[in-house]
Image (cartoon, rainbow, N blue to C red; front, top):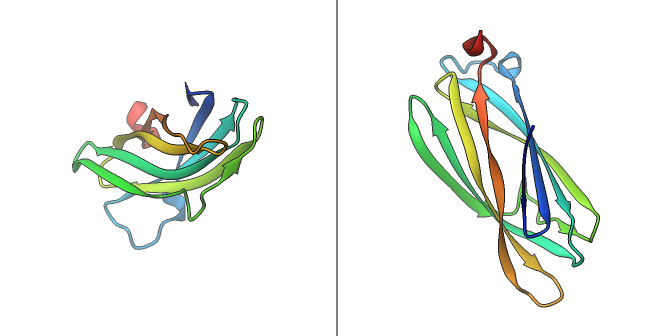
Length: 128
């Protein structure tokens, strides 16, 4: 599990190889990742946007930006957490992801970035 803490927000990432759930995707490797976001600060925050960097060892670097996460813009009170699961398909057996969330502190509207720690996406037999 990879972890990063930025501006009193803790982000933890767990990954899993998911090819057993694919059909008709020859030459692709599916990975799932679970993100847990903890508000360790003393103010309510809202996740507004995400910015991902995706590195595929065969296809190079790509970026994905958008509102919220999996269709949500979660509001986190102090001490609360939000967890979601998403996925990434790579052509190669090895890649990585990292990025940032744009958050808004609710009491004054201040915007700030939170780091999403870099994590490896690796087909299990690659490390044998």
